[in-house]
Image 1 (cartoon, rainbow, N blue to C red):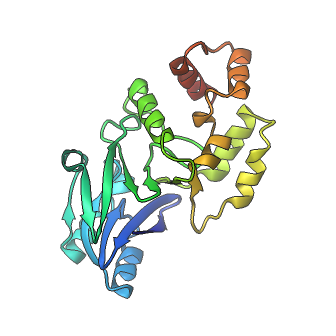
Image 2 (cartoon, one colour):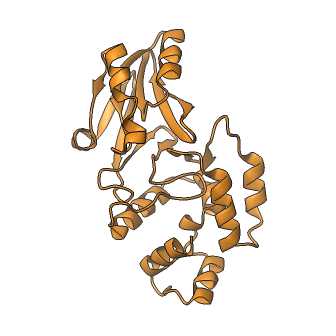
Image 3 (spheres, rainbow, N blue to C red):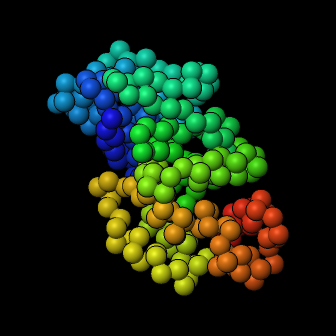
Length: 232
């Protein structure tokens, strides 16, 4: 299984997951680029799917369907199935509500396509209003292996690291993270995210100290999660 990343609009990131001669489009806003890739590599697009239903992620759906006759599936249908077959591989569907109530992520091999749930360096806004569900989703994603590659729905790396530096100015890994940043392919391992992403570092002494300084609750893990959301 292979994953191709496509940038569109100002900072959106969409994906083609490929295996054998088949492909699945996730958040396919880069319509022309994706269609060109499919044609160049003699791939059949079987499904058009999304990490959530915000229009900046669904904008390319109909054009890709019309051009390829691929099948569209929404979050509810994908969660009911639990996975999609692609070539000889399996794309797993993970329920990750929080950013929106219908947010899902996709696991393919050692890769996680996280939409607006988890970005490189930050997390999405909690538009659903369910901060508890968002916490559970982030904890679930954090449970994956250290070498799991995190692919987000936007490239917010520069801004995210400015925020991370304000929250944790003495973190030595931020400069190293920025040196590794490649806008042509935006991806970091979960290990690196744990080193710099403040929204994954709510249990670290440095972040707890920052919460204490601001007078934010920090006794429980959930309190620390809600507090780090306020710090950012």
